Each structure stands twice: as C-alpha cells, then as structure tokens.
Image 1: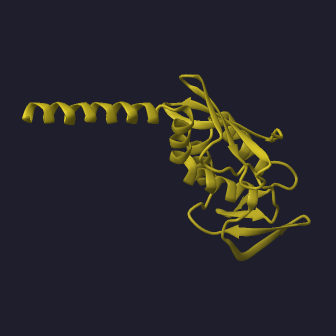
Image 2 (image 1 turned 30 degrees about the vertical axis):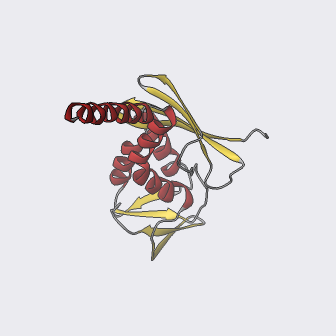
Image 3 (image 1 turned 135 degrees about the horizontal axis):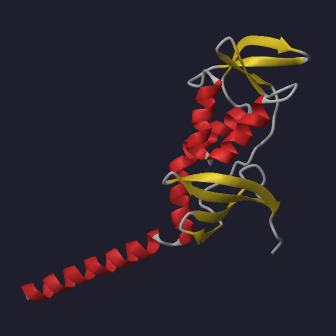
Length: 181
C-alpha cells in the first residue's frame, strides 16, 4: 500500500512538473514574463518622454516661445534619463529616443543648470496591456510580440524584443489597426 501511494505521489509530481514546464514555455506566457520584468521602467519612460505624466514642478522657464516645467522626482539630469532608457531599450533605440526628445530648436526635454525641464507636449507613445495577444520567437535573441494598445483597443502594439548584453530590451515598437474579425 505504501509503495502504491508513493508511486501515485511521485507520478502526480512528475505530471504537475511537466504541465508547469509546458505552461511557462508557451510563447505568450514567456513574452508576458519578459515584458513584466521591464514594465515598471518602461512605464517611467512613457510618462517622461511621451505623455508628460510626470511630476512637473511649479518652476518653469521659457525658451523661445516654449515653456518648460521642472521634472521632479528621481531623474535629475539627462544622464539619469539615459540610464533609464538603457534599462528598457536597445542602445540604438535608446539613443534615438533621447536624441528625438532633446535635439532641435524646440526639444521636449532640456537640462538647464543641472535640472531637467519638460515641455508641456503630449504624445501617447505606445502604451500596451499584458497579457499579450501573440508572441513569436524569431531566434534565441529576438521575439516579435503583439499586445493590445492601452490607449485604443482597436489597435495592436507590435514590439520587437532583442537580447542585448544578456538582457531583453525593446528594439522597436509600432502600432497597427486590428484586423476586423
């Protein structure tokens, strides 16, 4: 009787372990785990670089015809923002976002006297919802993921993840309209 009970317990443990291994290797579940690991920092980048939903202080400066508001919080310099972007995006993508936000005649973000300021501009960026709709492993170092847009459920956010320095990072994001069913 003990032998039979032991066999049943071991068999159930093996079956549950196999189900667990199968479940965690489903592409969508794996993509969800990867995105959840960078989601907190990703949302910070969206708030700072796109939506402007950061704590903007009362202090403001005017450059040309644009008014810039002090960004309050943990990010004090452009170097801080560069470090944040490097946690989320591949180096090429991080550099492109930083350049688009800080370059030109009327940049969105500026650093003046060691303080960061942001123009009151709005772009929704690519906010998305987890769980993802689909995930395809393109190679050991690249995934293509589609997630529902957090701004408009009629759109999908297409995310290309790439492994850089042994960490998953966003290489590219685009948005497309969902195909009607």
